Length: 130
Image (cartoon, rainbow, N blue to C red; front, side):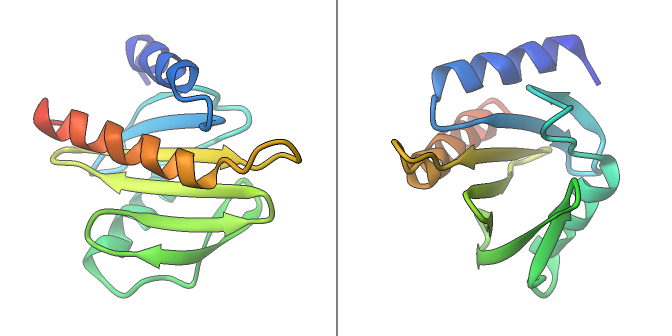
């Protein structure tokens, strides 16, 4: 994991307040960076299983850090899972993959804006060749 990528992830979380955490991996699952690896422990194994869902049948759920995210949507562009107030977003790019997490609060429903943030980041990184 690169400190440069971790700083980039933290910067994006600061820019997009609807995101609680953000991680980038390669399409091989290799972790580039994470904004908060303690609360959002995206591992190579988890990344590989989530990325594999884009080339096969959609899993009914993904388990991250002991929490089971029920897959609500999967298409060529993204996979979205929900666990209580948390929403997981997986966006594959050209050579990387974006993993985002939003957490709804009593004051703010962040899932829609978190999804939009990950979609924008995905488009931005695709244009850059990632």
